[in-house]
Image (cartoon, rainbow, N blue to C red; front, side, top):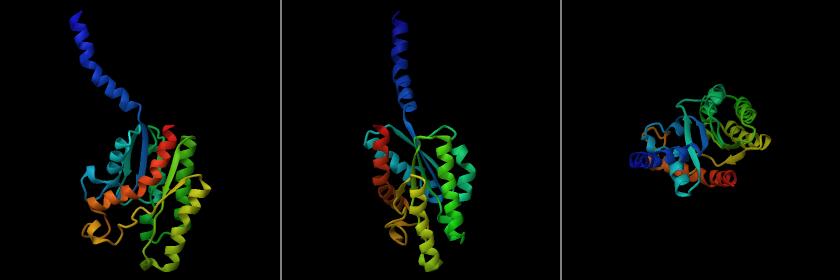
Length: 210
C-alpha cells in the first residue's frame, strides 16, 4: 500500500509538469536568419527572449522558432503546412527581408505573404496572425524601398492580421547591436528585437488567453 502511494507521489510532479506543458498554446514564428538567431546562442535569439517575457507574464504559451537562415517568402509558403503540423494559436510571419535584398518585385513578395496567411487560416480557422513589418535600405533605390515597405500594412489589412513593428527598429545600422557583418543582430540586438515585437504580440496573447 505504502509502496503504491509512494510511487504515485513520485510520478505526480513529472505528470503534472507534462500536463502543464501540453496545455500551453503554440506561438509559431516563421522567419529567416533573424529569427533563427544566426551567430548567437539559441537562448539569445529573439524567440527565446519572447518566451522569457511570456513566462514572466504568466501566459500559457510556448514559442516555436521556425526560422531558417536565408529563407524567403516563397520558402515560407512551401513549408507553412509542415510548420503548422502540430497546430498553432498564433502565427507570426517575419519574412520578406531576403526577398527585398535579392531585388524580388514587391508585388511578388506581397503575393507570397498573403498566401502564407491565407493558408494558415485555411488550416487553422481561429489562428491569430501577426505580420511583422520589414524595410529596405535606401541603397536599394528610394522607389523600391517605398514600394517594399508599403506591402506589409496592405497585406496585413487585407488578411485580418495584426501588423507588427519593423523588426529591426533601432537595431539596423547600429554597430553596437550587430555582429561584424552589420547585418545580423548580436545578443543585445536580438533582445531589442524582442522588445520591439513584444508590445504587439503581448496584446494578441492576452486576447487569446481570455
